[in-house]
Image 1: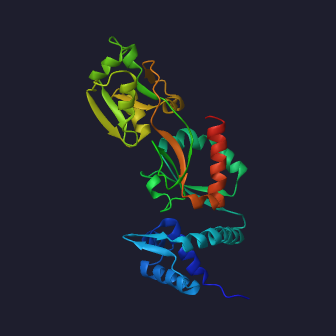
Image 2: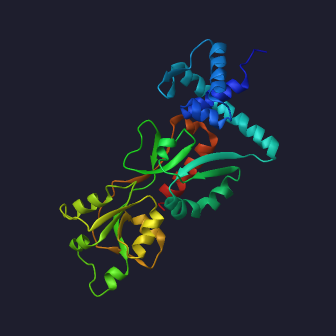
Image 3: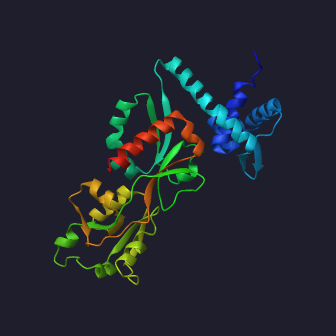
Length: 296
């Protein structure tokens, strides 16, 4: 039987390749960075080839490293699944997913029972912290990101196209001085999501009001809180049509009948090689079938 390198060295190699960071990989494997580096060096000595280009605060696979990863990463994933199956009695596939809370609550969670019924072995670890796209491969297997254009180094699939709505409290149109003209925004506070900074300027330009300035601009990092602030009369939210439609909040209304294409879309993103992982591939295919083809 041919000799094989230690499994711990292979595991260390795959984890560093996926995270692009010795520090992050060491944390995932509960090792010190020096200990993990020694395992990588042992693998490189075994095959007598370097596998990474060492850069400042990062490591990047070289050509030999990419070739090796493509061959062994899927095998290691299957081995991990097999061991988890033997120890738990059921097959378990785990996906670490980054997603914004509003998308999760409005568009993902209503369908998760369908996902569980179709793939009972697939489990999601949900991460709602910010900057998910930047953390793909470094703690996240995949993310659903709200962005103009995804990182070109990532695999990306657009999940929707949307309209920018001006969303306000119902009292704004039912009060004694109803807001019916866009020019009246000069007396109101605009609520803007930090991940969608250009929604107001895009809407203003489409409305032919490039010089219009709101009373003030308040920034949020939570879409749910933006909707609540708008419902409470604290300002008008520049958000997507889907955010308004899925909220089903009778306190809210869409202001003005102006069609404005949003510069932002939701995208599924992961590292290209992550699509070889069964958990990522199953979730990706289900997500596209459910959200894109069905059109929810």
